[in-house]
Image (tube, rainbow, N blue to C red; front, side, top):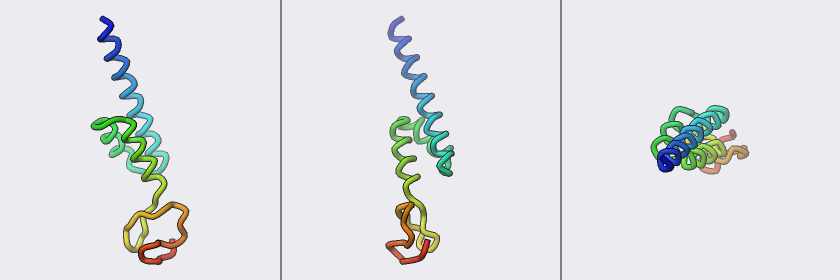
Length: 81
């Protein structure tokens, strides 16, 4: 009986963590669905770290490489952002 309660609690926290990662990614204008799948497949912690990393970066419109969000020029192609 005690093992069932522990498994239920772990499943509950896994599902809630996955939901929180999805909401976080969506509020950062990221594709929440893909972070949801990442969180379900690996863990909510992995999904959150990936979403936080992606939220700190933006894509250069010219060369399509990711740069820091606060950058004013792309360090790769020197395009103004």
